[in-house]
Length: 172
Image (cartoon, rainbow, N blue to C red; front, side, top):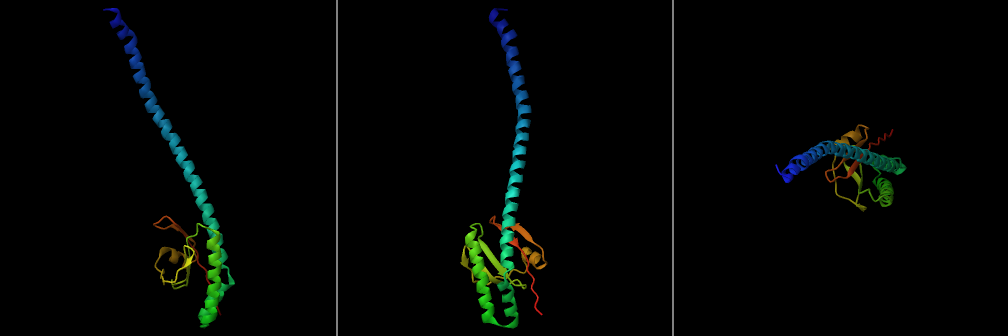
């Protein structure tokens, strides 16, 4: 055997086999390490996203509650019940004005609506403008939850967050 063949057989071939083995080992164990790192990063991102969404939901909930505790909202329903339509409309406009202020203060609020207990929309702002078209939502899951006194949080098909909350007023 000549020197070139001996060099190939005893030096280059073992080096090639070591490199192939090292590459396979690195690929197998490196892939697992990369997957574990990617999994941790995804979990961290999901946790952060969850906290940010929850913070936003909490802020929106406070905003919704600020509308619901308005005396004008209770007055609207009381005047409606009594048949005092001019006074009811004045109270409704006061609530609508408060909703406009809220929507202009928070650019993430795209839609604010107020429904009666039958599911009929009485006040609506969409993209900062009054929405006057009638809407009946009694069969929607969020409306059912709100009427039962439950809070409802969910995402619309377009990706917007929907928050629904019930408000019960009784008149004697």
